[in-house]
Image 1 (tube, each protein chain N blue to C red):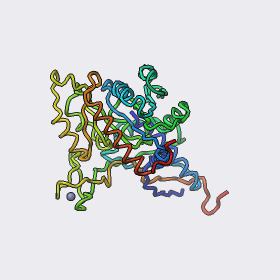
Image 2 (spheres, rainbow over the protein chains, first blue to last red):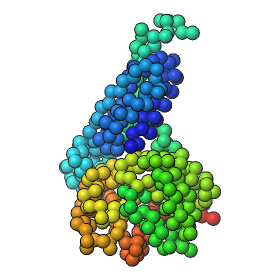
Image 3 (cartoon, helix red, strand yellow):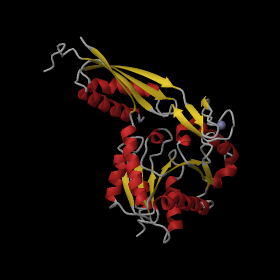
Image 4 (cartoon, rainbow over the protein chains, first blue to last red):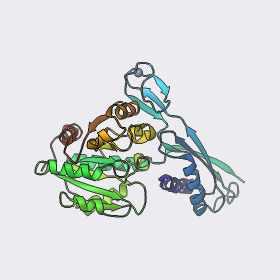
Amino acid sequence: MHERSLVQTLLKQVQQIVADDGGGRVKEIQVQVGDLSGVEPLLFEAAFAELAANVFSEECGLLLEVVPVKAECSLCGQRFEVQNYEFLCPVCGRGPVDVTQGDQVKLMSITVDSEDMVEGVKS
Amino acid sequence: MNQRVLTIRRDIQAEQKADAAAERERLGQRGTLVVNLLSSPGAGKTALLEATARHFAGRRSMAVLVGDLETDRDAQRLAPLVPVAQLTTGGACHLELPLVKRGLQALGDPAVDFLFIENVGNLVCPASHDLAEHLRVVLISTTEGDDKPGKYPKMFRTSQAMVVTKLDLLPHVPFTLEAVTADALKIQPELEVLSTCALDGRGIQEWCDFLEQQYQEKIESVYEPAGNQ
Ligand SMILES: [Zn+2]
């Protein structure tokens, strides 16, 4: 259950990024989880629901997108979607392939409400 | 009310990965190959390390960081053979780099040839954490079933070697080396496959030769023999 530690890492980064950007209320965090990230989306969501409540004063949503694994053959250059975790090039069948998508947890975007700021006036 | 969207598009582990890369570089430069050993509980990581320590005795220097959820039993087993530090996760399912650095400090940051990290027994969570290793090795015992790689793809995808353990039990279990190898190679076609029995010593020579070869490839030929005393 390392999802908890990943969510903690995520929340720390979100707080830092929002603070650096002038602050505000975090409404929604969009995250991309790859099929090869080693993360179980349901566990990630559960950890988020629990931990985000401690960090943000108001409710903050999580938009979790699960993305498939994609790879590129290093011999023939073929790009393909990996099915059933079979990392063989479908064209030449020989090349070692590099994963190009789906092995990470990515923070995509943060939606922030800056209601405490009067338009144009920042104290 | 103003609403704004901050576009980030960043790996949340990017910072940890960069830290791990820097530590890997530091250890490599001074001549240490870091080996991260991963497996289910009871696959035989400690037994393999005991056999490795006996084989390397007097020839190669090594140290072990042992990750455990609560106890220090594995560390106690290894302590008579090699310098060992215990990393207790307090129930957490995987090790992270700061804990590894602390363990290394506890050992006095020795310039050994091989630093082994005996990870917490688990085929899922440890796969997602870079511990500054140069070599990631997954162990699978013959009692676990030969379809394990397909069930834990991330673990096998991110490893460079697979060591099959408990070869002595092969006649008694529904497990074949062919099946486990085929299953693993679909996920990681470049995986090095070795098979061992720590009890009777089968395959230990080959395993240690493999480590020597990795040392040559990843340390000696990359960094020149600068840090070697
Ligand atoms: Zn190809």
